[in-house]
Length: 208
Image (cartoon, rainbow, N blue to C red):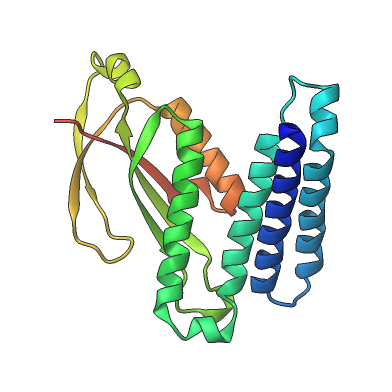
């Protein structure tokens, strides 16, 4: 009975969430594709217990999460195209913060580091390209698990000047060999947000 109850609650929750998101999405050519994805999420949610019963070792939680993330990101972009929203800077900042939250979640899922800070440069002047990401700088922090792995590596001190938002703060960081994980992070963000890898910079915060 608990399984059935949780299943019904999940379906109701997903329908309410998607209904709310549909209200925020403007009526344009992209809406029919977004509605299709929403219907797909509902269908997956409904048949999920059957799939889990047939293939208990194969979870689709990650697929649902990725689709939900895409819808939420797409919804934020579309909100910025409204003239009513364009008149206020608070929506721009809310959009920027939501982007940071999404990036933080994706980075920490793909790397053995925690995110210390994220700076994002977005287009906020050109209405036609409003909300387009122009650059990302990510400062990572070592976790207790990976400190041991880098303790014997040669560390080169560098200065990171955060200028994406006209912020003159300077942060101390060190450069270590995270080429593999760094490439994974850049590949993921580049594909997900449609941003060139060269416009994504990753640093490690120095632990003094």
